[in-house]
Amino acid sequence: MKDEELIRYSRQIMLPEIDAGGQIKLANARVIIFGLGGLGSSASIYLAAAGVGHLVLVDFDKVDMSNLQRQILHSSNDIGRYKTESAKDHLLSLNPNVKLTLIDRKLEDSELYEQVKKVDVVIDATDNFTSRFMINKACVQAKKPLVSGAAIRFEAQVSVFDPREKTSPCYRCLYGEQDITDETCTANGVISPLLGIVGSIQAIETMKLIMEIGQTLIGRLILFDAMSMEWHQARLAKDPECPVCSNE
Image 1 (cartoon, rainbow, N blue to C red):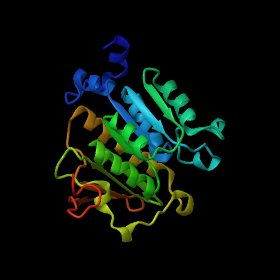
Image 2 (image 1 turned 120 degrees about the vertical axis):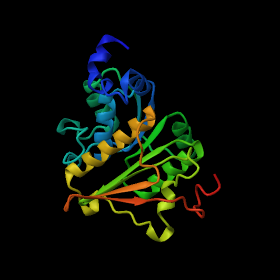
Image 3 (image 1 turned 30 degrees about the horizontal axis):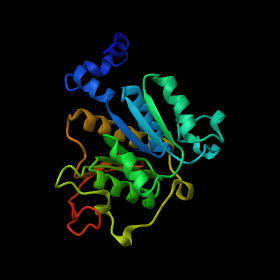
Image 4 (image 1 turned 45 degrees about the vertical axis):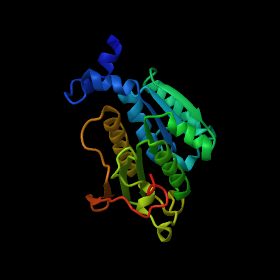
């Protein structure tokens, strides 16, 4: 590691669980983030700052004024720009050593799978079931860990799904057909710091997966209620009838 990197990441490197070896793992890692809204903002900022070497940023949307209340990756001057371009400017100003790949279109089917196959960890920071199910399916097929987060109104949830682990459920195990009803921030609202909390947890879980430290959220769903400031945990089991992962 260069002297500049030792100084930049010194507060992480001094942690015995990380040390120089863990920092090198971060530097060599490739992470894809789907969605550069509220969740993707804080997740990408912390991963870039922490020294993850290569971030693949996927979002086909442009910055709107209504985004700025919670999507801290973007500023007023970015209104009308692609979120990927806005993200690039912010993240490189924070850490010029991070490598960025920008994808400003929707990925589907084989193209989605090919991008997922190239990375070490996948972060789902999208806001609809259609995208989440497609990303989850690609992760199961490519056997890549998925760090999933969602937030709306004052409630949030976070979990990790890792198809490399035989007992790990996938995201689809959580939801039967009767449970699939999209609720968006646009229609229902969301308090802004909630996205930062969840995106930060996604960043921590991603780093733990890369460095292979600690106990990740595989098999557990963390639920947070900001109004009562209460955290709850639910155990998740693999669904033997899951249409995505039951035959894997």
